[in-house]
Image 1 (cartoon, rainbow, N blue to C red):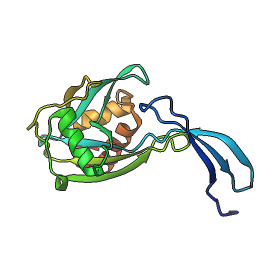
Image 2: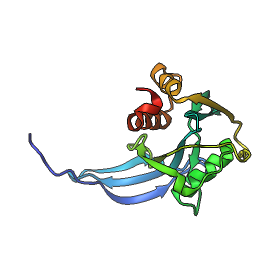
Image 3: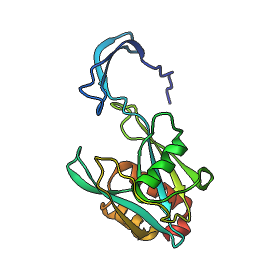
Length: 190
């Protein structure tokens, strides 16, 4: 196998061309490793996201159904959201749990499932996943003004089947469900 050293692009200029705070867009002028200059490389620095696969003591996964305007669809996924300003990833995950599904937990209860980059060519966004065991509905939802969320619980093996059948098809939710199933096959009955 012929190997060569891959080099990062050099950013020569950056301009914020965002149409609104809801969707940031940057225009970069970059120099490639071969010396070629591209002056119109656009991408979105959307920011990091957190998601939590919360399992009840009966090994039911807590899911959310909500409308996602980008696709114009009502989707089933894991609870989560954008990393909040001035908050750690863990604190943001804990806040999203309470806000979206009414589950209050502590930082030491979350276990990392890793990270996922959905589209590293056109976005700067990493989704960090966590798993929470023995989740209890011990608080109330505190939804944002743009959220209308239905909370559902479903046995872990059924959630895995929903991924297989394409009923859960949001990338980060699918990936964290699959990662959890590989890590905890007894819970997902595989």
